[in-house]
Length: 365
Ligand SMILES: C[S@@+](CC[C@H](N)C(=O)[O-])C[C@H]1O[C@@H](n2cnc3c(N)ncnc32)[C@H](O)[C@@H]1O
Image (tube, rainbow, N blue to C red; front, side, top):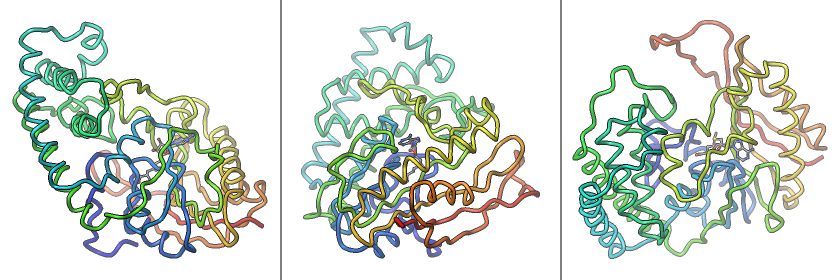
C-alpha cells in the first residue's frame, strides 16, 4: 500500500489524466524487487511504470493499444532543461495569439461541429480547434508537448462529467474562449515545472521504447527482461477507448482503439458475464504466453489488477488468472490483496459482495 501522503501526481506523474493509473509507489516498489535489467509494461496507459523505470535507470519497453498512451508516456519521460521549458512557454503564448487570428478569419469545420458540438460549448470548441490548428500538424518536441497540454485539458473544458465518466455533466458551467486560453497556458506552465523537477532526478537515465501495440504481442527486441510490471484492464469495469473520446481529434492520425480492447465494460454489457470471463481468461493466457517467454531466468510478471464487474455482480479475477497461468505453463507464486470500497450514485458505500485489488506475481513453471 502506498505510504500515507505519497503524491500520485509527483514529478511528471500528473501531466495528463489517465483512468485507473497505477500508483507510482506501487511501480517503484515492484521495480525495486526485480533483478537488474530491462523491464516492460504492455498496458502502459499514461506510462507510470515507464517514468519509474527511467528513475531507476532501467531500460524499458512500454506499449498500449491506445494511440494516446505513447504521447502521454513520451511527455512524462522527457528530460529537458530550463531553456527548453522557457521556449515551450513562449511557444504557448504565440500559439494562443495565432489561435485568435485563426478564429477571426476561419470557421470551425462543419464535420467537427457535427461530431463534437454536443460535447463542448461553441466558444470552447472553436478555441480548442483554433489552438490545435495554431500548433500545426508537425509534431516537433515542442509542438507535441503543446498538443499534450491541450489534450490534457480537453475534458475539463468540455461538457463531459469527468475523465472517467464519459457522459454530459448535468451541472456543467459555460466555458468561454478566454477560459480555454487561460487553462491552456497555465497547463503548459505546470507541465514545464513538472518536467524540470523530473530532469533534476532523471538526467543521464535511458529513454524508454514506446509502441502502439496489442499487449498479447511481444516485440521481438523485448527479451531477457528482469520483469514485466503491468496493470491490465479489470474485467468489465472501464471503457478506456471511450474515456478519451474528447481527445482523439486533437492528435494527427489517432483513432479510437475499440477493437482489441481487453475486458471492456461495453463488451461485458453486450456479451454477458460468462462470455466476458472466457474472453478475459483467454486474453490473459495469450498475454502470459507472449511475455513469460521474454523473461530472463528468475524474471517475473507482476500484474496489478482488480476484481471485475458485470450486471450480475463482481467477477473475482484470481480464478481466471489461475486458469490462464496454468494454460501458459506458469505458476502464480505470490498474491497480495486489499479490499476496495464500492460507491453508489449518491457517493454512499455500497453493501454487497466485496471486491479486491491484487498484486499477482507469476513465473514460468
Ligand atoms: C489499468 S490501465 C493501465 C494504466 C497504467 N498502468 C497507468 O499507470 O497509466 C489499462 C490499459 O490497458 C489498455 N488496453 C486495453 N486493452 C489492451 C490491449 N489489448 N492491448 C494493449 N493495451 C490494452 C488500455 O488502453 C489502458 O491504458
